[in-house]
Image (tube, rainbow, N blue to C red; front, side, top):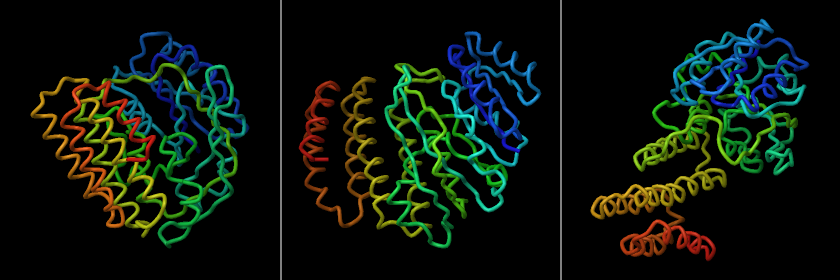
Length: 335
């Protein structure tokens, strides 16, 4: 059986479309867990309505703790051998669950599907699709395919099928004390225990990009960004080290994301939150030191760029100006 976990927060406008798309699946051996994260609209009532109409649906309610706590609630309440996550403002095609090929799941630890991204009007923005892939990660297989198709770059929990045993045996969970990139941290943590990876050529998940966000969010502090990037760096080192992929384009891409986004986001937050100058400089010096040391030896020409950053970071007084400078630097390939 597949457990479908849907975290719900103030998504009454889209929730019925999401739930109906799940209940209309051609594959019927599933349970649907709706986790209401303290919604203040009609979302909780809608969850209860479906639980009364269909015995496959179970509704749970909790005080507002964030999307990670809602997903963890679903993990603990699930009964299926396999678990997949769907956001309450997204929806799936009728053959979505069937195309995970449940009859052959004993041969895999993780199954990945493609994603169709649309805007609120339904216009397709992007299609993320893969060829059929079946590789054993711990036997060193699939390095070329991981790089070529960027299999680790889609870090969201959706369009994936997870083995419940792996999650529970290794104490895996979504980090509840951070509200950014918690899904990617969960994905990378899970990958550490994956031997057999299966990728399907089917794209049946509709990821909708809205102007706002219907899942609960909190402001992000510098400390939270720092924790996220520290965890990402540690997990990336462990994962790519186990796979012997430090020389891969996939690893370099991940490292670039960690270093660059950490620099821009943490730095901008310091100014937005009004950190005093002495504290800003302490954080900047640490970022500069870490930025240089994170890169492999072949990237030591970064030292020239880092020196420029240090001068810039000490003198620019405004987050708005920094944002413009960062965009300029990227345009002229200085970072």
